[in-house]
Length: 213
Image 1: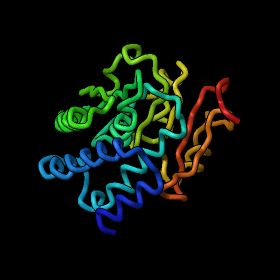
Image 2: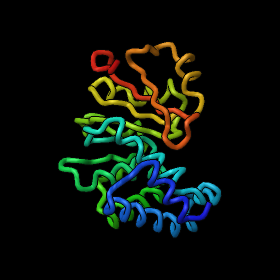
Image 3: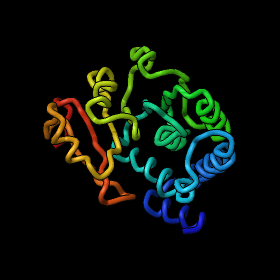
Image 4: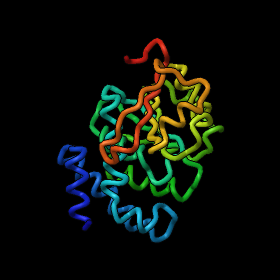
């Protein structure tokens, strides 16, 4: 797949506005330049950047369309947090808190936020050093490939308990992960099929009293 066909395929799967597409293109261009000097993304992964990373991240917003205040745990190169922040760039009151301990990655994320006008705040810190109250209120929390499900839920629990919705891409083993998690229940956990990979799933976590049936 060529870069152009990859981009077209991604935007067909997860359509965005023309302005958002322009901002995402700036992000991809910066990623292409920065990855040569810091370990942001592999060559193989970058070859399908639009489908594998941009669209895969962008699809999360539709699962909680009213969410305006997000947290991305372990933001890395910005997937999914920076993509969400770009999508929300013009939304009143929107902010995506990207928490990342790697200083070089944080420098990259700050440059992307500056160049795109993304609704992003970069926190160069370990997750456990962040005061959860300082980021509240939070509508949604996300993380991609951060930790096994039980550990991820433990890290996010303070925000989930306060009413945030967890939106966690978990790949092709989501059902098995839920079976292995002793606290799982149908009322708290809902899986949504990925638009990018039908075999993969996105885990949506809500407090029992706010769970959707």
